[in-house]
Amino acid sequence: YIRGRVLDGIFSSQAGTWNVTIPDGVYDAAVRPFDMVITAGNEYVIKDITFMGENAEFVLESEAGSFVAINDSKVMKTYNLAAGEKAGLNINREGIVYFKVE
Image: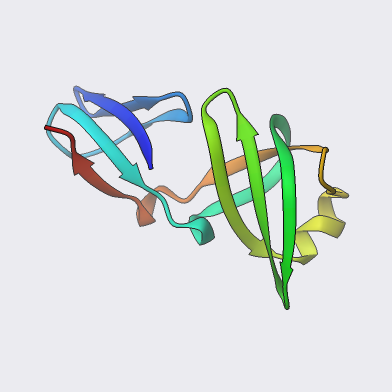
């Protein structure tokens, strides 16, 4: 989960800021591992990679916390990725489910 605050239609968290159509308040955003797409970048450190056939599970860490992304294992060759390397991360926001924190 990514904890953030919605104010005037904008969800803000350590993992990023994006537009939403939910009421103001504090939310936990549930992001599925398949909705986290590895990209070129240096915001995250790859702590571990587990191969799962055609896919690979990446454990990423940043100041925002730890995240698990499951991507096609071809992404490793595309971006020349290995444990200890840096990467970027795009979140498919259409797949996010928000849970209001009371």
